[in-house]
Image (cartoon, rainbow, N blue to C red):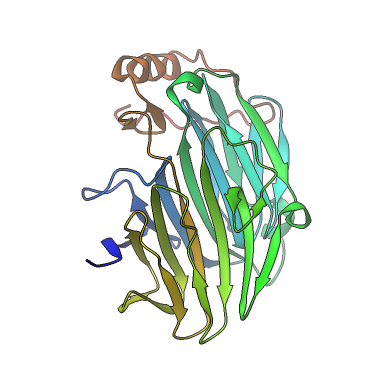
Amino acid sequence: MSVLEQLLEGRPRDLGGFSVRRLLPSAELRSIGPFVFFDHMGPAHFASGEGIDVRPHPHIGLATVTYLFEGQFMHRDSLGTAQLIRPGDVNWMVAGRGIVHSERTPAELRQTDAGSALHGIQVWVALPQSEEETDPSFEHHGAASLPELRQSGTVLRVIAGEAYGAAAPTSVFSPMFYVTASMEQGAQLSLPDDYAERAVYVVEGEVEIGGHSLGAGTLATVAADAPATVIARVPARLMLFGGAALDGPRHLSWNFVSSSRERIEQARRDWREQRFEPVPGDSERIPLPED
């Protein structure tokens, strides 16, 4: 039996000079543990005066996790948060019953003659059904506050949840792990074996798992209870993630996640009729796709 269950290749989508690889959700796979959405942003370079402008938009029923390798974002939300995120930091936003946020390249980066870069990962974590209507909240954790572990030829940073005997400061709602790993050529790393659902995403480089070669842009799910070792064929950067299986199916529609289709329809009406709280200092808004 192969240690790998599924392989997904993220196809880059051009968003006007900026590419995004979407791995989750896909036709083959809807979730891995509580992770229901996985986007690899960039790498991209913007000329002077340019950048990213993700206008205010709503979420329910999830937590968003932003982690950058390069660049910066200014996060603003309907709670009044205004938080700059830099490489190695973590923005953990719990939508719960409803939140609105925007993410933009800071003005000072747009004004540099050299322009700016952006490279990172954004994921959505579905909240347990009992917490889907929790109050919205936001946490920022600087890079220095995240556990960093060093093994032979590998540096691990725990972004959320628990792994390798370390726990991140993010306030998670279910058993999960989310780790970034930087591996030197020839380094070997065993995956956490105490979670029902596990996956590896290759951000950069090439690795081998169970005799299978995985290149950049590839996501692999790993069989439950199967010992799995990652071997770096060249220097590589990985995201390791997973957790307990979801406590029931989730519906995804636009930016909304819920165990109830009716709740999603209510959120759509609320956004159209402007019943969500606005983002202070950011008056724009993204309409529903059909609008």
